[in-house]
Image (cartoon, rainbow, N blue to C red):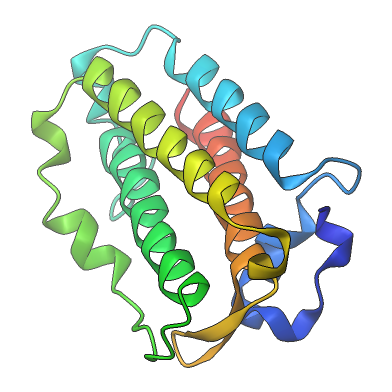
Length: 173
């Protein structure tokens, strides 16, 4: 399944920017793997404990907070995909990413810890999506007050990570 199979009514318009950045020719499974490799390569850069606290402007997140945000969002989206895949029709709530960042204690963590956790969480996402039969990927539920499909959530996870990788490269590293 490729991003070109998505329909705009499978996700909130807010996520369109993430969807637009997805390579059209790659399947979701390959995208999960390639994106994991790319992010881990970025995290293999020499980033000191002091650099993890760097903010490129006042009021912006530190590198550590960006990394924690990537992990938190992927976990939340895993849960959302699982709920919809299992037929749970509960309207899944949104979340305040700024509050999550503020309360993440990210500055107390090491780069190695972030790398290990990101890899674990992404491997879990990959295993979760491999467990879904093809038909389940098209199932829909409600996420943050709007329709969402399991497959759209997967592409959003990758697009979101791509977005933050680009910001890390351009503004922080």
